[in-house]
Amino acid sequence: MGIIVGIEIDATPARVWEVVEPVEQHVDWMHDAVAIRFTTEQTRGVGTEFLCDTKVGPISLVDKMEITEWVPGEVMGVRHIGLVTGVGRFTIEPIDLGRRTRFTWAEDLTFPWWMGGPIGAWIGGKVALGPIWRRNLKNLRRLVEQPS
Image (cartoon, rainbow, N blue to C red):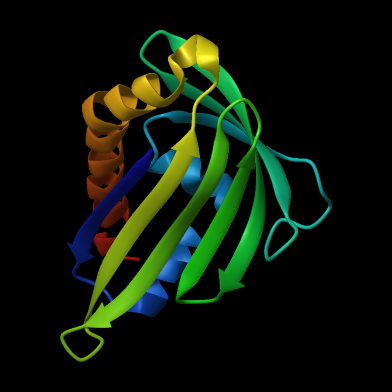
């Protein structure tokens, strides 16, 4: 199941990265992320692994992730290696001569059979995750645009 959501933010890419870079603070803007616990000593960059307690409606699970791509100010990519598998990627692109930013969140996920497999993924993506992630991006924009 592929989902892509994006938002324009009235801040520089550097400011957006400042808020997105601390993985442990994603719970501050992701409605579905309840807690993040690192399983590696490192907490930044490729190879960082963590567990994310995730709750969507009545479904709670622990999403095991590894950072696979890390370009400061530009890209953060993850691999999901728990019950839900797949890859995700945040991209940060300058717009308006770098005064504003386009933030895009793309995920390609596979759900286990007991969550409906491909059909559950399609329905979950269109009905649940897409709207939740759009809300998350609005939360991110609010955080980023707050005066420091």
